[in-house]
Each structure stands twice: as structure tokens, then as C-alpha cells.
Length: 412
Image (cartoon, rainbow, N blue to C red; front, side, top):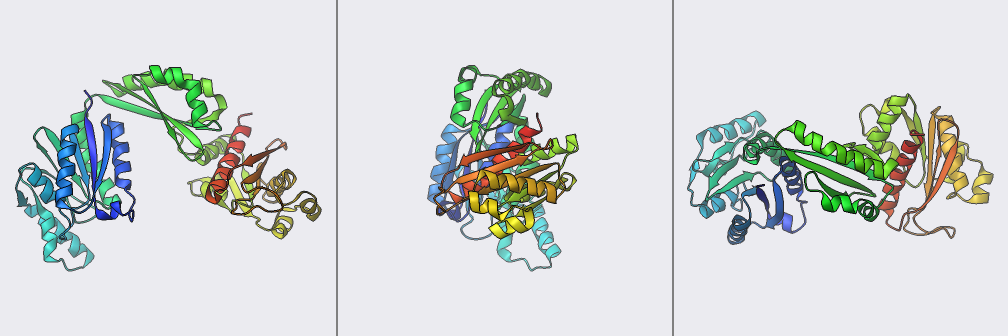
């Protein structure tokens, strides 16, 4: 029977929205990979009574309680004391942790406040998790048939301790083996994917199929459990193949990471290069490509031609073309793609022009975008998109479509 975990984020700053609860996201992803279910996320402020109530409720419905935050040295850091009280355990000072905290401050050349020693007060008999990124240790203990794991709140400390200490412990509880693969899909909406695959998704038990909507794309997570990793992998393979066959070229990869990383790998395999000309996206396509290591092997660069003058001077777009058709048009997008390809001596050229908003211009609605691709055979394709009125989404989706157009051209 699968174990159920609940994550309790402790901190008034989380409730106020001053800090995003990225710890819970990271932990949930890690628990899913272990085959441990998460049915509830709870957030509670720095208040003893409300934290006790949250722990009592979680204890009724979950096998594993994981807290984040509230392990610091100040008066409002009450997680350890509250949870120890809830499970009837005294706190005891752990001298090796005191020594570790002193050594941490010594390395920084800073004086240690006396209240920092409070961080070494831990529930009797617990497993101590050393904090290699800060001063607050975490701990693990079992009580009343429950497994309690306390982690620090700062994301880099929480992630290091969870992956380095908590995951090995949780693996001993989970048993068996769980394997998950993500199928990355672009160009088909979540509703259409669900309609195509509904019978398969409803019947799926092992492996399971779960959809996740991303920014303009869909991921399907195929998860199988078995006694060994090889057995679990064998269960996922025919399901992934079946889904890929049904969705065709809309599937851009398995565990691919992103559209830009998929495109870079395709360009490298085929020994081709890409250049871009960007107007409304303001260099976002180039930024996403160059964020990846090895991009310089295949990406020649991006010309950010935001004004009509920049388009004519940098990309050889004729002024008469701009006057005749307007800066946001199929003709200008095509000229930009060819200009980028020629000026930067690339095999493929992409041109993006549009109105990202917030206001319409020259009678053209906000969200109108034209994307042109001049491929490695010299053929040019232009796509018109209506991407709504949210400025940031228009820019992100325009880049996504441009990357996908280039990807699809390399499949031909």
C-alpha cells in the first residue's frame, strides 16, 4: 500500500505572499518520484496553536509529515518545540550540532549569537540531518506510527537536505521502484490531448497517465511501479510509444526539458545553424537559447530590431515593404527571417514581429504576431497567431511557436 505524505509549510511570510512556497513544489516532485502520494499541502503562520492544529489534522490522514521552516534561532521559530510536544518528546541539546554551528560561524569570520545554540535543541532519539548550507539542522523521528521530517525553510538549504538526507530515508520506507517519464507536447491544447487519449487515460492503472498544463504546452507523465527499475521501464515503454504514435509530431520529446533544448539538439545532430530577428519578443528567443550550454555551436545570434529603422538598417528590410504592409505583417516577418539568415550566415532564419500590447496599433489587434521561418532548403513559411492581450504571454508564446516551427522544419 502506497504511503501518503503531507507537507506543512511554516512561516507567516508564506501566508502573506511575501515568499513563494517553492519548497513544497520541490518536495512534492521528489515524493512523486519515490511513489509516495501527496494529497495535501498546508501552510500555517508562526503560531504555536495553529501549528499544533495543523499537525493533529495531518496525523489523522497521512503517514509522513514533512515540515519546512521554523527551525531558526529566533523566538518565532517554533517548529521543533511544537512538533516535539505534539508527539510527547523532550528537546535535548545535540552537542555535535552546536560544534557544527560554531564551526560555520568561524568559517565566515563572524561572531555567533548565544541564541544560535537553540538550533541544536532536537527531539530525543531523532536522526539529525546536518545543514551543509546554513546553521539550522533538520531531523527525522518516528512516533505514534508516523514519520516526521523537519526541514529548513530557505530553498537552497531545504533542497540540499531533502535530497541528501530525507530521500535516502524515504527510499527505505517506499519499497519497490517507481519510474516516471514526461511526454512533452506542443501545438495541441490540454483539452484536445485529453479527448484523443481519454479511453487510454481512464483505463490506465500501471502505468498511470497524468496530464500537466504548462505555458502553452502539455506534459503527460507516465508512471509505472514494479519490483525493479527494469520492470518499471518495460511497463512505460509501450504506453509512451502508443501516445507518441497517436499525437505524432506534436510530441517534441520524452523527458526533453524544453522546446529550446530539443531544437538545439536537433541542430547539432544535423550540423545546422540558426539565426533570429526579433521585434516584439525583444531578444527573448535568443536569451532562451543562449541560456543553454553549447548554444554557440549552432546559434549564430539574434538581431533585436525593434523599430522600422532597425529593421531596414540591420536586416535589409526595404522601407517600401514596411510602408506597404506595415511592420506587423507576413511580408515583413518573411523579410526579417531572410535578413537574419543572410546577415548572420546561418542555415535557418527566424523572424518575429507583432503587437504585444497593451494597446493596438494601426488597426491591428493586440496579440497579433507573425512568425516566419526560412529553412535550410531556402523555403519560407509564415504563421499568423492571435495570442491574446497579456503582454508577457504574447512574448513567451511567440517564442515557443518560433522554436517549434524550426523544430518541425528539421523533421522534414
